[in-house]
Image (cartoon, rainbow over all chains, first blue to last red; front, side):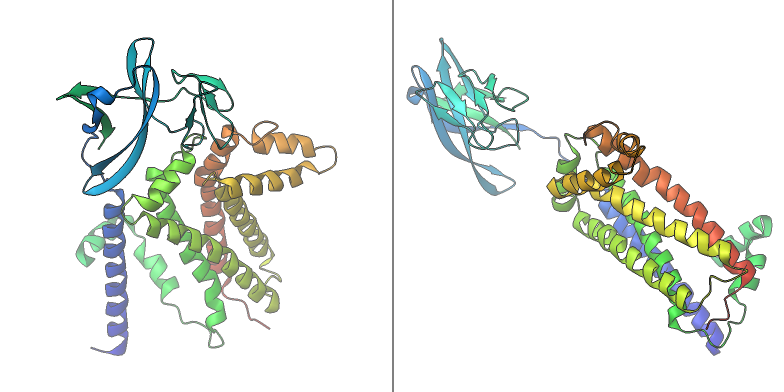
Length: 148
Length: 215
């Protein structure tokens, strides 16, 4: 093999290899990193008799997604006889809102978003009401549903 | 592989005319400074490939653009890598085009008969700048927003017509979701197509006119 043939083969081999590597990377990149459909899984949060008789109660709870332990917060509300669970994530830019008992409102510390006890926007920049989380009461406990 | 290519080429006939060009002897005075244009072209190809890949996940809407970029960087497999390639190729492309321009100036390679190729080259530089400017808005974060605010405001200071150019660029008086979609369209369709046509003309003239005598 002379010099010219060697270089020609080497260059062809280099570009073939480059093409293969690029192809593999492109395939890996475009293949979805999450195949499973998101499933709502219920995690026990508090005992049933701890439910607020009236008003809002903030709960902090732990749950696991793919072996990762995460801590989350939610508001359990009993208002006019109906119980529901609100997510504390402000719909504006995702800060965590706080319940202000005297004003009877959820207040966002970041940009002044205000929500009433049912999560409806009263004032400020939020575009949507607070998200209601799915929940159920079974075995004497309140379970909150999270997307897993 | 070779046989498949030969089968295609016996009908397509693209090998022979290019063989003459690709295997011609180069002048002896050629040195690595003559690679700057070729490096720029390779970077352009990297941008095309990585950009095409990024467009699979990028969402050009004011509500989701930022989130989709975060997702590309954090969740998509090798997303950080492809995005890094796109970013660094873009930065280096400008650097290498400028170095290539400097080389052409110093060698006075813009003189006849290559004036038109110089003009085409300058257009390429402008399109590269425009691609960089439009691409900078796409992550849709604070830096992107304010850079575009400043950049388009400059166009707005042109006497008489400035205001209309500003509206044309922004798609309205302010930077909104319609600006984002506009820049996205420019960035992924109009500018790359223009760039492709310009580069074709550029290389065509290099082939026809040969490499200049230098200093």
